[in-house]
Image (tube, rainbow, N blue to C red; front, side, top):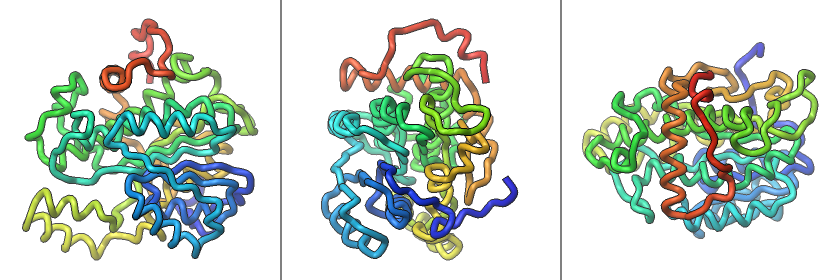
Length: 343
């Protein structure tokens, strides 16, 4: 990889015949992702967001970027696992999915419960999108060179040192502060990508098998899955920080906003690279952490801790089963003791 530039106007390849699903696609970075995908002639984009008015406004604005008949808005309330499950099962009927881009997220904000009684940061940013990804995994697996992109953040490095993902009560601890709630959920996203890849390679999830051929040629099996960081971007999430921290938050946001980048021009670059670039296949970019524009960076030591990955996976499964019952993507339990010793 000789350079760290990826201009979505010129570097996204022709997407003819390809199908994309983008969560949080109606505003900010997610809108930028959808806009640039539409710009390059895909077969279909499913835009997932929670508010119908935002979806309608986004589709109108997208007319500047391409044929909006190719865009289908779906109501996906990540604060409700039941509603997320319904959307996931609907998408599971697709014949192909070239990329699932898990971009939706709550920002630095006060603690609140989801509809399921779970910390909303953890549920929206990680748990609900984990379930969505694993439910549609069979479609990704049968689509050659498909991608799973999980939008994390550099703030995953700031997750509380006490983070263990050991219990639901730990997740629902209200007094750890807005920044810690956010950074913990962003750590969970990087952990999830690495845990999923490890399990797929071991045949514990999905069909297993090799993640790529030596030539980088088209193949089905394990999607190319990577976590991304969008950079310092102006979005509505800064308003959540103001709400959480009051005057101090307002001063802080005002100080840094002039140095932040535009979400459509800049904030979508790392995710679009991970979701569309042929270099991901050629260079076998798999299970990595990508920062703008297309640089592979080393995530935090804790994100690479296989025991922490396994605890997050176990807790996430338990929470999902307690709310949804039997999980279609879960295979019968096997011995994971050897998994926890691998990197």
